[in-house]
Image 1 (spheres, rainbow, N blue to C red):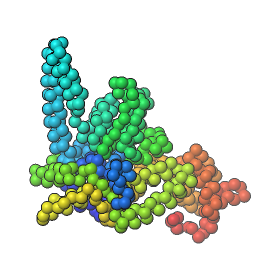
Image 2: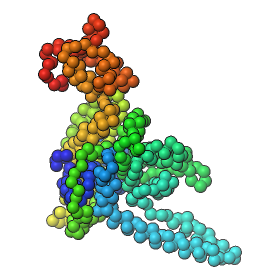
Image 3: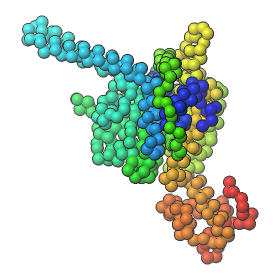
Image 4: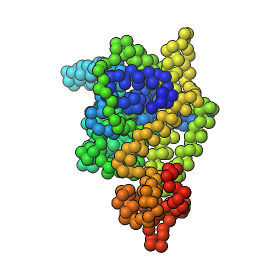
Length: 465
């Protein structure tokens, strides 16, 4: 990844963590973006300043879903826990302390309740204690790691802006079909993506009514090895077709790097990162981030490109169209996180006290970085993942067929032979690919019904564009 894709604070963090975790820079950056999302809880992104409304209903909550899909030993869980350690642990510790205090108050009230009799005075006191117990709420979780399906659902009912880590996601998906709770959990997470709120009939409160769940922000990290024992081609296909995978920014790691010598940052670096995280949480949460005029111009150009790609994939009946269209929402959400990072850095390094506005403009530079960020993971991670599984886009399939036919040196080829060597079957849309190539006058059929490149002599030695 080029340095100019990342805002300064993120680039600084990635460079530091790169020396102590097994994952590469792309994976570190992706996980960090997810965790930084949790530090600006309650914030929303708006398409323009004029779109900011009193109830903030026009804004989009900052919700990021991430998938880390690569071989065991690549540092998926290690990277997540390391990023959490330096960015979120301080908050988790504070909240756990508050929870212990709440538990102690609850326990004392319950002891007092049991000690009361049936006198008029005691009955009044019982009512007071019961009211107090009812109003006593648990703190909202910030890190949900290795939780049961039931525990994860209960944690989400509390709201807040948690970071959820689902390890062995491929196995989790397989078991969901056999577990009502796991299935409900995945559906719940999926439904939260667009608005941060949902109601599921299968998730009910004690009175039997469907519980409404609403979060103030969310990051979800799915981690899985690639292979038949975990994440399979069937899982990938299903995730693309049903849309659940289309919400996920994919990170893969094809090659290993040297094992880091150190596993901890220096005390000074750890202190600086924690101070930065605390400032971001305190000063840049619950803000309205909006696209400046310059940022909006960039976004509209990106929107036009994505719209064109989306129609191309959709009209070709390529399921990737659902992933492509999600890049628009992802780019704006990430632009807001990038702006929060830069604004926090400016606030910390300012020579005099700075007043922080409720409404913060996203600069052209941060919008540009966010667009490049999502495009980078689409081209260099998601598409490579599909190729690894043989789930090529239609453009890739056309190119593969073309290159195969080009190598036949103008000798006609059967459809069966094309399938045999390209592994693209009729079920994979081979007929429509050949028809499209014929319409575009790339290939034709000879008198024996064999396929060959048209104008072969002009293409020999060339690379097809």
